Image (cartoon, rainbow, N blue to C red; front, side, top):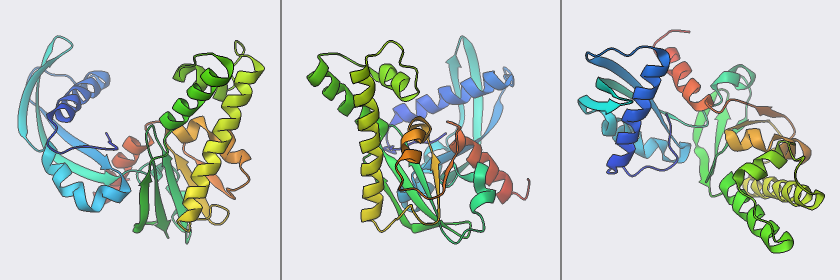
Length: 253
């Protein structure tokens, strides 16, 4: 599991995590009515990782818990918690492509934010990372406001997703044009923000992860400002990366 923003004292996040654990146990077919040991792998944005990972791990280490989910009584014991940096974890499925590169930038475009992290010779460089207020929800809001203003039409996120994915048979040409043009500007602005931080995507490798990257792949490739983009096209890339990093740290492939 992962999070963009978390107040350590917020119990709602912990409760939601318990439900997420229960869902995963059910989905894997591992439910038993007796106490179930749980090993929890979690993630933080790279810019917050160094300062917060120890507190974040302690936040989840609370011993045995009992609760009800989907009509079943769950008894779990979170006996181990390990935190990893998001973005770096999400790049693990393509780690072989960047492990020997002198320089690669991992860019994680999410809902509210976009995180970036420099990877040098396969190692995360936390001196070059940050969280930008440049997630796809901002794009959704901008598109909705413009379409409403110019065409007197209301679009929701699913409408915008459909156009960006090319499934726009029920939308007029003006709507399609506005959505695609604004998405292209959105990506150009993101690349511009990275350049302001002395990160030029026309050199080295650029690894794009996160749902926003998947949604805006066409715009990223069409920007002409990314020399060698690599896309991790799995929404669950961070979670898979935590597993790979954990196994690597324990000497298991």
